[in-house]
Every structure is written in C-alpha cells, then in structure tokens.
Length: 159
Image (cartoon, rainbow, N blue to C red; front, side, top):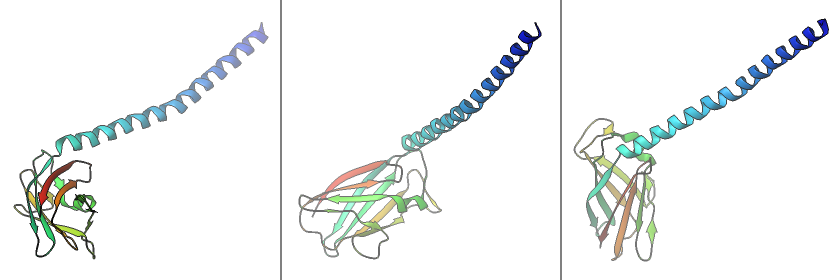
C-alpha cells in the first residue's frame, strides 16, 4: 500500500513538472506569434491608409531635369524623414534610371514640400521631386515613385 502511494505521488509530481515545462515552452511562442500578427496588421494599415498621385510632370530638356509633382491623397501623414527610403524608376524603350536620393552624382533626386510645412507630408500636400539625369533623349518615359512602405504611383511623359 505504501509503495503504491509513493509511486502515485511521484507520477503526480512528474506530471505537474511536465505540464509546467510544456506551458513554459508553448506560451512564449504563442506570445511571439501574436506580436507578429500585430506587426503585420500595423504595416497593412499603414499601406491601406497611404496613397499618392503624380499630378504633373515637367521634363526640362535644356537641363536634363525632370520635375514631378506628387500629391498625398491618402489619409496617412508621411514623415518627411522617410522620403530618403523612397525609390524612383524612370523607364524608356532603350534605358532606365534609378536615381539616388540626394546623391552626389547623377542620376539623383531631391524634393521640396510645395504647399506645407513641418516634418510631415500631410494629406492634400504636394512634394516637388527634381530628378537630375545626365541626358534625356527624345522618347516616351514611364516614371514610378515608390514610398518606403511599398505604395507606388506611375505616369508617363514624353520628351
């Protein structure tokens, strides 16, 4: 009888230790998974609320500079500090350019906030991107502007 009580007690203790070990192993994984879902949801919300449109393009053939006016038409404000992580691609039938932001050599691009102030690009405000190229031969071009979060806008122009 005493032998069975000791055996049962040992089995109960081992079962409790196994259950605690299992919970300690699984609980952090579940918590980490919930943080991942929360992060993905936040990124998706940022993309859904962000929208931009190219409203005007002026290629200056004399200086090989392309000026592009881009309006924030989304409900999200874009921090101006994030514009350094944006990409611009210009494609023609014979060439393509991916200018660097404020690069020391061409091709490069920079921006000015046309109708706003502060450190955010708010809804309804427009930035003017000045894209410096080495040459801009006569052709039809497609320009695409990608924000830091993957939201993009495209338009065509000709020289």
